[in-house]
Image 1 (cartoon, rainbow, N blue to C red):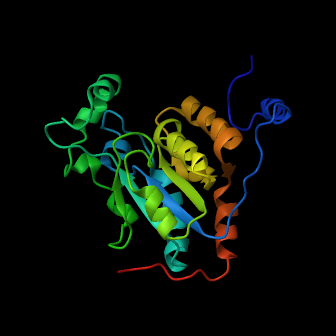
Image 2 (cartoon, rainbow, N blue to C red; image 1 turned 135 degrees about the vertical axis):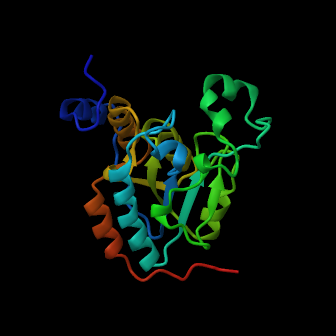
Length: 224
């Protein structure tokens, strides 16, 4: 059995022959989804933290393009009441780090380097997928989005889960490889392989930026 890893040409060929790995491509109106780039994930002294400095820089480049072109942007974090009553008994047993995600704490606050703007929604999600238990789908529909550019962390967890939900809802999924990260390299490359073969297209960051730069002028975002 071959190692399950993104970029393995022989394994990719095997999956293509088995009917995986088709290309979804870009639609007409992309949105940027920045997943969980908050203190708990980005500080190396945190229990689930890791060095995501390169990922941060890649996301900053994407944010610049999306903001310049006034295309939709969304951020997520995970946050619960201090009582932790809303975590759920099973989830708190399986992933007890959730019990430290207190709403309003620095752990769940987005890193300042991303400079989230007032018109960029911040979605608090209770589980890995950005779509589960949130209004993200409704916001994407309202903004006329057909393509979700997924970034952030962790590749093997919340990124992968969000990609699966997005394609289940019939959104095109694009994942710029340099804009996602994980605390475990082997989990990262395995998840990239799964995403690329099952849920969306993993692409190079520069290719994504070039495509976005060539899009026609979008319709303005609705702002109440």
